Image (cartoon, rainbow, N blue to C red; front, top):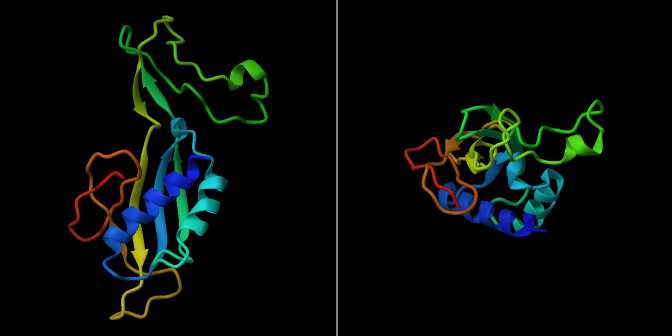
Length: 160
C-alpha cells in the first residue's frame, strides 16, 4: 500500500510546478523494480488529488523494465522481466539478482528504479486548448526519494 504515499508525493511535486494552473495530465515514468502496482497508484492518485489543482487529471504511466549490469563480467539482464502467457513457470517469475552469465552477486541497477514525473499538461487561461491538450511542462532533475516532475518551462527536474 505504499502507492498511497507515492501518490501523495506525486501530487505534491506536480503542484509545486503547476504554478496555480489546473493540471490535466501527469506523465510519469515508473521502473518495474520499484514494485509499484500501476492500478493502485492510479486509484490512490485519484483520492489524493481531490480538492487540488490535480483533481480530475489523467495519470499516464510509462513502465520501465529493469536492467542490471554485473560488476564482474559486465553482463546485462532484466532481473524481473514482465510476465507473459509464455512465462507462467513459477521459477521464471522470481527476480534474478545474480548474474545469469557468471553467477556473481553485486550487480548495479542500470534501469528500472525510476519514479519520475516526466511532465505535466496544464490548462492556461490565455489559450483554449482541446480537452486534455493543454501545454506540456517538463519538470526538472534533482534527487530526493520519490517522483520527479518535468516542466516545459525552465524548471530543473526534481525527484520527490
